[in-house]
Image (cartoon, rainbow, N blue to C red; front, top):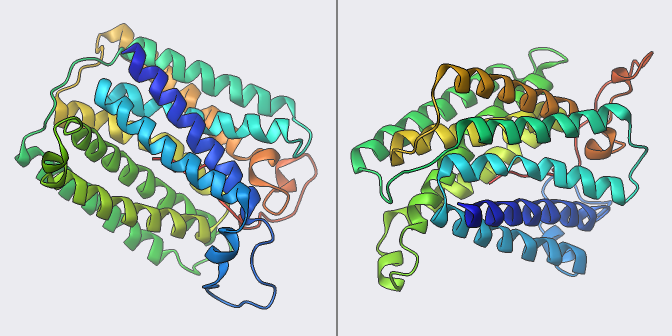
Length: 316
């Protein structure tokens, strides 16, 4: 279990590093005369060492996540990925992206305390290597139904009001988080084939569902980020991903959490503390950047939140 925790922390740090490096690398990379989709953007980014470093860090993060899920329960490993937001916050603080406010530190402390208390109270353990096919079908169809319902709701919110962009981003961020939770469960299944040879890996359905599901979820995340401000979509990414993954860990793999009355009370309070910290930190000027920061969140502010130029924290 200790090995799984360390690997999950390493994976979270790598994905945060990737987010920051790719954000810095993509800054001012778009051609001034380009309209719509810029097909040459990826080639310009590939010439930037910091962007390539971010790509390498993302691949390393996935490798650490795969190893962590191989050794530990899904309900233990995936919640640790919420720390990615804290690592990004730490990077932005060190890089001097702006003055760190007291509420930012309080939000970071609330996130850390909430996550630690949640894992301590729940103490996830147990679980089997493989889930029955019937349970996978139920989980997959349920996840697909939630995603389609979210897409339909987001489509209905399009251009409905000036605030519809924020609502659409929140809905899409929520379904993206749930989809990432399902992808994490597939990674857990796929990790059980490691060490069994290339034949076992290539013949496993989980490899192909991982590729297709991962690509579809990345597309969902892109739409969430394009729909409205990062502060609207980030909570769904950060909170619902580990929550959905933990529930799937219990449903699919038979993992256990402490469910006594006292444990459930502490877990609920810890989850509320974690969610509050995520919500507050998602509005931090350090994370959203100057273009998206909303002065209306400050005393006497009246401006409208803009859209993010890049996503500084993509969950897995």
